[in-house]
Image (tube, rainbow, N blue to C red; front, top):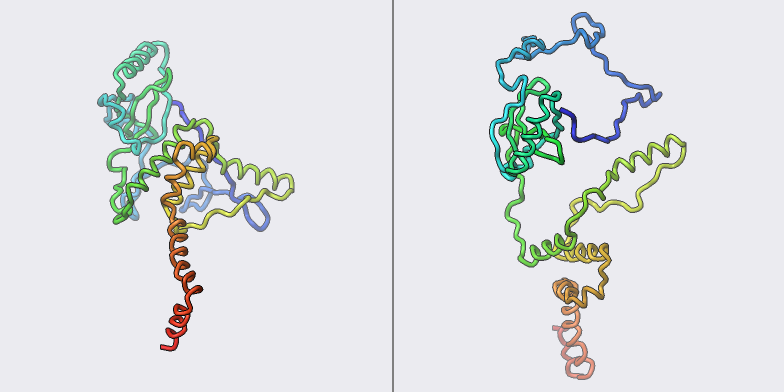
Length: 294
């Protein structure tokens, strides 16, 4: 098993803020009050507060499990039956010597032709695990999966009692279609790049870069419909579509038709209309003067 992914996260060391000295974690025996090496350290299960049960490597190696020395295939199922929430870290599998080459290729081609994945059990890092064997390119990938009791319930997570209109859903779908399918290769870890820039600046003794604009405050109340429409227009501009092209396609009229700003303008116009005849008719002015007196 070879890791199929890499973690490029930036790792920090702990330091003493007063003098920038490294902070080290030392393993100390509570009884002898001295630091011990890794060759002196074993494992134990805490059965009770004052009861530790030592477990050796030999104890784990002699477990009566068929999965202790091999990957035990349990079933073959369509991949769509496996919820993505089950997936954990993937590993490439390599055959153990020339004798395993033909069975490896046979399994790979059978999985390809059947459009299925193999659900398997195996022991890894001291515990039995569930996994899915699937094909990626010419290799077989063992995707570690979570057991059923390791997946938490989502009950109470989603908001309740929220009403949305068909127009809002249509606008959201329009945004999805405008953005379309993206090439995942274009995405980069901008947080890591920003942290690396700060590290380089501090190492060179110069001022670290600062953000161009402050982030939007959390919890800000927005007009969802207007936000969706603005997002659609911004996505079209990123793709090179101009406002003139939208108007020609007849989409701009639909967007402005539902903006709340036009309703505000209509109310202002309705309020101003009575003011015009009042300026021409003296009777209307007298009536206006009498109202405050009453």
